[in-house]
Length: 209
Image (cartoon, rainbow, N blue to C red; front, side, top):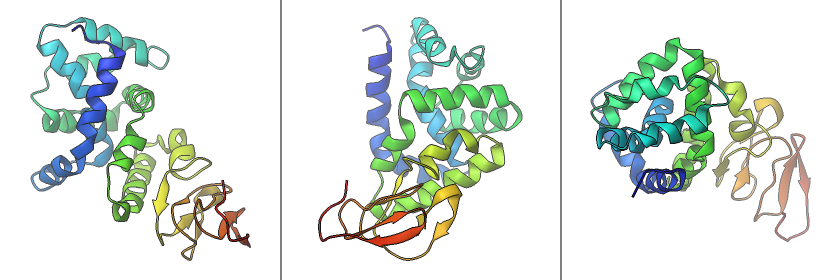
């Protein structure tokens, strides 16, 4: 079956189911960071398709990154040996190349990689996931693109009894309910209270939207 966007999305979704196990093994043998690892996970199906002779995969990749760059990532992935090798090469290249980071961001967004990776984690690890990415993206200079996902409106959920991150990334102490969504006007989906503009507001004993 020829490589296409749907088959790419399916492959990435499958690979993300156990990504934490592969990440743990990689962390034991290198100084790999999370952002390039997740990008490598997302791009590996393209690299594998190209290695198998399906050069049309590069055209599919080009369609995803066309709005932000010149398909720089296509040149980077063609000599990958595996996911770990790809993560290492992306880490080195992305640190120096803002245009390449823009293409990686486009891939991560199009394939909804961050949300899928977070969903595959145990609840207790989700705060670590968001904070680790926040720090890495801030160091790379592309955190602003992810503010809505990590520290702004629509941010990733942190889970039971974790610190809530309010407007502008300000930490709001306390454990307020369960499945609290971080970000501006963050709301609890199961508890009696919600965070609105960094103030706890008491609500009736019903679930909030």
